[in-house]
Length: 583
Image 1 (spheres, rainbow, N blue to C red):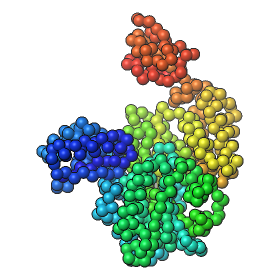
Image 2 (cartoon, rainbow, N blue to C red; image 1 turned 135 degrees about the horizontal axis):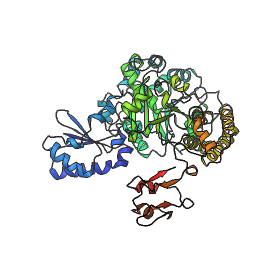
Image 3 (cartoon, rainbow, N blue to C red; image 1 turned 180 degrees about the vertical axis):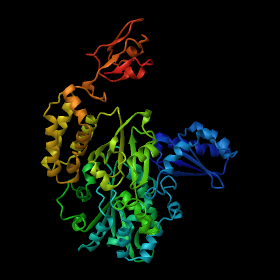
Image 4 (spheres, helix red, strand yellow; image 1 turned 90 degrees about the vertical axis):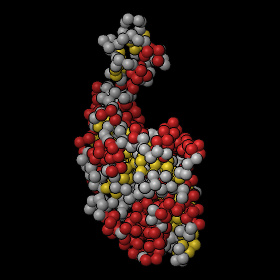
């Protein structure tokens, strides 16, 4: 009998460590011979903490939203008597969350112990590296990646084989491999989950890439805000060195390659490869002019190949199963699968990996289960602060690089934030622009000043102080920032504004002309009121109001004093009769 507890960051935050402690206490108390394992995130973040029980015949039962109190019931019924506790188990409806996916990059996440190299090896790990080193030439490895059609999963979707080949053909040595794990998009956690749940797949992918381009040293540039990912990476690197998968004379082939970790300081701009290299060298993270590209002159002025976590995680699977197997999934120009962090106003939020070409609508409704509260969907934000908002009318757009770009959004690293009818699109644009404006390194005048002026206009519109000419000015500024910025941050920062202006211009106009927020979210443009027909004079709203803005007497409808109201929404939350409404 085996018990597996999900201990990715999401599981730990939901109480996974307390569940693990309860499991260990039950085993000790009942004197049972039960193997206990921990795993990374399987993707069902909305159901954490997760606990899986695997019996001696290999039958598995997944328990969801587990509390320490539930563990005793599970042990008594399932572990000791062999009867699963169905009321705690994963429902058939939620089972569809995983069944609708095609997992390649996430193939081991949530299944193996990320801190145990033997489990990775048992799942077929490092066989691809052995195959590459003993049966393939470096050119043959690059050709296999070319056949696969793998494109960089960090955002731009550049052909992976081309970058590898360019670095291999570049003059100069030593050559370097860099893994970009500087995941900074709000709502994105794809790279973190892979590093926490299957770090060896990234190490193996980097080693294969190093063999292909002729590199002997590699770096993983990972955000310091990911302490668990860093801890498990450090453990994985030490284990790989001990087993001979990293270091000198790997697998007796004469190939030498080692990896070190660089913890980044959390600058969003360091997701751009030249800014990342500057930070890696100990300089301030600021982008550099291209060309020369990193493949010609990168880290320490030497040829350098940079790919992100998801890209490297796909490589061992491709080498082991063949490029044609990967290319058989997806579309003609976008091969394989893509991992998304599904978040926002969706019922089943978490990590999903789907084949390229699947419609956005299927990801949100078939896998994600639709919108919370069965509200109407308004849009989905793709690509994070650098992406754009895709309206409900375009949800049948297939998930591939070219189709997404046509909507005005980008694939990005994989953030997918779902918005419903209660989301103000003007405020959403303001939120993302506020983020990119603060994260601008300041090197380019267009990005440094242009984003600031755009943000000021958006804030003015949200405050009910917008002017008729603001929309024209916004568009002009947005295009100038895109054209005049040096790196991808500035070039894509206007995307949320341009797409919301394109698809939701009527919301901007309502803010400016009618001084109304259609979604009833912008505080300066709304008012909380009490319906006298529904008010039962219970006084609960008045007692809970933090600023004493509600007055009334027993037997009479209560009233909100508008000049005192801070629009916190507490009155609406506590009213049991639906008497409080937003105007």
